[in-house]
Image (tube, rainbow, N blue to C red; front, side, top):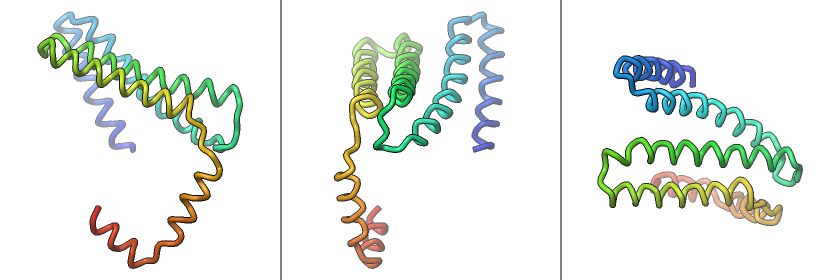
Length: 141
């Protein structure tokens, strides 16, 4: 994780320098937004995972909304930055993918509540597999 962060910081600094030298201030703002949003997303994902699946609280819902917003903003930001380079149909397709991804993340972090029976069924079915079956599954993957 530390190596990824250092590599990301180095790439960010190089891209900030290039955008500033070329006076591309919108790209500069986008780079800074993605950099800070990424770390905020890691932090809020960590906080969200600390809640139990049964817990229902306003704080958990707000954190889920923040995670959804950050994912969506990053996806739409990338589409917005790369759409002038691509043709109209490719840009339109990427906007559709960003909308679909945003809808999926909204469902996962805001709407969907994991049922305890689903979790028990999953763990029970996984525990019934023998070691030989796990070996076969891992070879196929």
